[in-house]
Image (cartoon, rainbow, N blue to C red; front, side):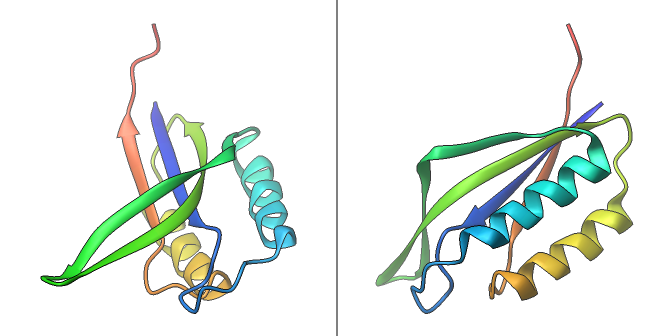
Length: 102
């Protein structure tokens, strides 16, 4: 079993708020593909990273996660590319973790 998390920014690279309909589309796509999801959207997560020695970058994020028995790397690579275009991002982080059901 795999837990896959999508870290989706609330703003594009120019600081413009992304439309709520975009997040609803992704939610619906993931529901259709995986049959369910968890959304961490009430209080945005804060991402912070250093772009260079003197400049830090900040993002407000929501996190969608899905669980699946198999990890289809090709599907996820194509989906990530689609999200990068729709969210106007250089990179959308999608990470997968193997999980053991207890």
